Structure formats: structure tokens, C-alpha cells
Length: 602
Image 1 (spheres, rainbow, N blue to C red):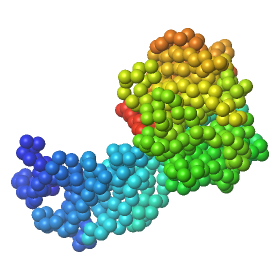
Image 2: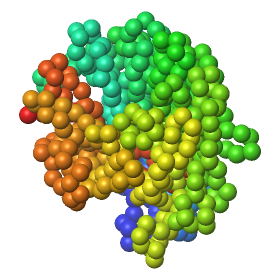
Image 3: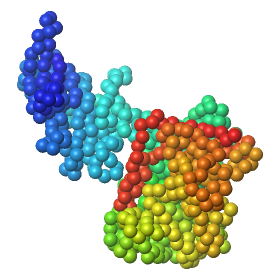
Image 4: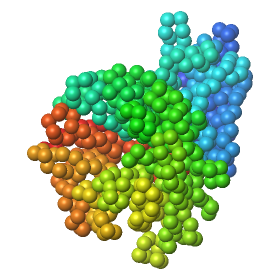
């Protein structure tokens, strides 16, 4: 039995045909018009000892986009007769290609189908259908016995396996997690995260040898710990692996139970997980309440000698190390739906900010900077000053990722300054005839009172990377450009030629101070003089090429006083979801072979 697609010049049709084994004579059993086949299997679905043919096909709308997928079961004695069919139509909000079915299997009287899932494919959670899949089990009569979709299945394939007396169905979702389900009822019996892209990492002493190890996670629900010295030597030794509730979007460390040892805290898409650093055991899981958990801060907010866990979503929620709630700060009801930015703790205050959901698309967006004490009571709350260049005289919410920063080295407010980052639509500063596009507004405020001390109009919000300080100057990195904010309103500008995406101060051989960062395609090192030279497109003093790399970790892994660099991958879907929350979007992928790589400085 075969399914044969017509030549592209001969219309859109396919045939179900058979060839006689004796002489190769071809017989056409069925011809399907305006359809093309995507999968076929043969097996006994009727419990009668015979065989049936299951065929999956996709049909086209007048604009040639896929509008439906149908699974048809044909009588084995007469394949021209369809015993039953099941059609899945394109999602109502999807004007592009709908879902297709790509693999079929018949086992123990059940038909298993792997298909795409185009639910929400216009949104960020399932961007263009690139995150979801569907796994469906049909009875011999065509009834749905069970169905798993969304992040629970692969859109392309599955595997049927026998384990003792059990028959299992195994599939790998697009976030690189292996799911194993019971054939009979679809109940999950095992979940195994694959490494996928490792986009986030922290250094912490896991094995108790007094030297830093590396804990990393990313695309999948897995978190791994490796011996730091083994990474330095080029022979990675895994210390443990843990499974968390969702995809990893941030990893932080801190002593959250007051025992003097650091725990690992993971922002895991749907929840926050607290892991024992020595074993990887999940000590607490804090449900996200349906919100996108993309960020977490670990710091002592109330002076009890144990760090708390701060989770910014639609409100700022603070938890104890055991996962119990301490307090919540929410925006006033009149501000509507808001989202909170990354949060910092300085001078005993919690500094945060929030802005309207979808703010870039709204003319009535709200935004506010807030300083809270250790009980969640506002010390001050101030709306940002709208700059003159802002189109329409209004702002459009708050930037979320690494948008709040505090350091005693910021040369304002006697070391008590805090930085907030907002969104506007405007022309390019100094070029009034240019197009109106999103820009960031950087505000330096007195962390004690909220007083505005300095304001600067920056570049695109999708270019903003991070803040850091050096020699008592505040710097903002924005895709290879370095904006400096010195005392008394003095500003500097320089840039590097590399596509620099993250930067910090580290230590090289001989105690040499270096700027170490992640670039699109690896890591790099620069002499600090690039910050103050005023030159553009400056070269570094060293680099490591790693296709698919972008994020990075700096840590002294062998205790010799010289930092190593770990090249990490990029959280492409997570970053785009964050951008979508404020009304934008930023997505880019590559087809390089991705990996985490460790580099020595020499």
C-alpha cells in the first residue's frame, strides 16, 4: 500500500494505491482532491484480525494555506471505503497554515497521532506554532480516548515502547522534554528533560570543595550542576540534575533558609523553584498563579539574616525560603493590568517599577517607580517625568528585563541612587525628522526620596542589555554601545565592533582588570579603556567564537584568582514573551549547533 502525491504541475491531489507483489500491477483505491498526505500506517483497528489503513491529509484554503487536517481510517478489504474520519480545523485566530498530522501508529487497537497545535500561534507563548504539539489516541471506532496538547507533546513524532506488561507512548516536546505516557489512559509516567539550550547559569560551591561550580538551565525543564574544575579542565563532570516546573528563564542563588549555605532559586515559567545546592533536590515550589514567571531576585528584605524570594509578575510577591508568602505589593486597581520589572534590593529598600501590559500599543499607559520597606509598605512611589521628545507627550510603560539597577558606585545621591528604565515612542534624539519608534528613558533617582537627578533618552528597548559600574561611573550597555553617566551630569559614549550583548567587570591573568561579556556568537574581553576613549567600533583584547552563544557567566572556577568565562545560549522564546508583555516583540533564531562552552583567560 502506498500514498502517492501528484506532480506539482498536475493539480493538488493524491491517491491511495497498491502494488501486487507478484507482478507490480498498480491499483488505485482512492483519489483525494485538494489534499496532500502527511502520514500513513497499517494495523488492526477493528479487533477482527484484519488490517486497516490510517491516512492523514491536509487540505488547502483558496489562498493555498492549510485550513484543516483529517485522519481517515480505510477498510483494509476495500481501501476505497472510509470507516471513519476525524478533522481538526485551523484555529480561529490563525490566518496562516493550520496544524497538520505528521505521524500515525496503530498498536493494541489504538491509533496514535502526532500533530501540530496552532492554538495561540499569533501570540508569544506559541509563536507561529513553534512551541506546541498534540498527541491523540483514537479508539478503533474513531472516538478520542485521550489527547495531550500544548507543551505536552511533539508536533512531529512519537515512539511506542513496551515495558514489562505496559505499553507506553514516548514523545519529545519542542522545549526538549521527553514525556512518557500510558497507552491506555494517557497518564504521564515519566518526564526527562534534555539539555536543549542552556541560556542561564550561576556559580556556587555545590560539592563543598571551596571552589565555584556551575548551575545552568534553559530551554527545557532541567537544571544541571557541573564541577567548576572539571569545566576548566575540559572534562565536564555532572554533579546532579533537577527537574523544575517549566522552562528556565532566570537562575539566582542565596541563603533563603538561614543555614549559612546558598540555595538555588529558579524562575521556571509557571512557578519558582528552590533547589538544594548540594543535591539539586527541590525544596519548595512557588506556583505562579497562571502568570509568566520570568524573573526572580534573592535578597534579605527584612533583616532576618535569611534571603527572601522576590517574584515580579502582575504584582511583586515576596516569599520566605520555604515558599510561604511574606507580602505582596500590587498596583492600584485604577492602573489596570500591569506587569512588574526586575527588582533590586539596596539600603534596606526594595526598588521596583511597573507599567501597563501592552503599554507600547496604548495611549493611556501607566507607569510608576516604587521603593518599599521590608514589610512591603511604600517609602515613595513616583510616576516618571515625561521627556519633551516623547510622541504625544506621554510614556508607554516600563521596560522589564534588567531595567532597575542600584549600586553605591553610581555617582549620584551619595551612593544611594537607583536607575529606572521606561518606554516612550519618539524620533531619534537629535534627528527630529526620523521615524517615531520605541526608545528607552533612563532615569537616575535618589533611592531615599525618589527625587529625579538625571534623565537620558536611549536607544531601542530591544537593544538594552544591562547596567554596571566602573570607577564610580554608571554605564548602560545597548548592543555594543556604552553610555556612561559620571558625576555632575557628565555623559560619555563609546562602542565596540563586536555585537556585545552583556558585560561586567572581571579579573584576568596577573590581576588585570577586564571587561568580560557575551556577544552574538561567543564571548569577548576588552580593556576598560574602551569605556572612556570616546571612540567607536573598538576591538577587544580577546574573544571566543561559539556559534549560537550570546549570554555568559564569569566565575573563578579553579580558585586561582583569574576568572573563566562560560558561553551560554539565548532564551529566544522567553525574551520575546517578555517583549510582548509591553506591546513589542523581539525574536531571532539561528541554525548553529548550540552548546555551553568554558573559556580560560590568558
